[in-house]
Length: 286
Image 1 (cartoon, rainbow, N blue to C red):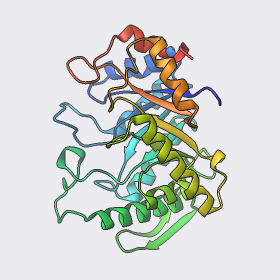
Image 2 (tube, rainbow, N blue to C red):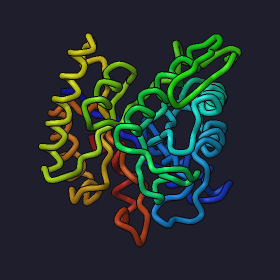
Image 3 (cartoon, one colour):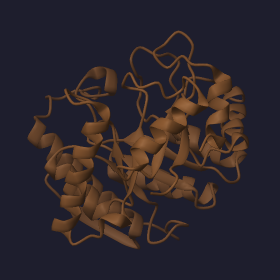
């Protein structure tokens, strides 16, 4: 059992340059990663700034912390311009970008249907997720891509120098169902766990981890090669009650194979309200 790496989730609600100070603060505190949600809007929050523009700016004002999305989805992004932005940020950051990818939510509060058109069925959403991710993988590996799928196309797309990270920027796949788990096993440098539903969060994570490992076996992948990130903040667990509480929970999840943990920057007046002094102590709590 290793010690999990700790990441901060930075809310894209501050204008620049105040937001730049927050990203620099995440690095100075010692967080290994700093993540941002990729939505056009979320749960009525305003303002809500673009994730990719934010990451490019954050990359320019930081030096060591890894940066990433939690998560990018097909809801409003096409693989071709997404790949172009990803390569650019990877270069600006000097190879510090991680790309969290998920199938996306169906509600308008999570960008589902924001571009109009009919609502995607669960099967179509899963099909789009797989095709979107496979095409993005090809676009980032380059050097040129032509692709015609059921939902997405790319014609003679040139990648230039490609990504700084080879063969491409690491993918972190958010998944629960069988097809998503297979996609994580096939394409992911990491898998994102977001406990929820009727099970206790620890038990839910244990079950989902077993499913990931089964998917890796089916794909001929060593499960130990896939990192596992736990997204916290959506259960009643007291992650930010105290540094000790955080360390105890982190140890419980590390025993299940979790390698990375993401915690939200405290946000007063919301369910993510917390003592900021506890949050600042988290990187050295383990």
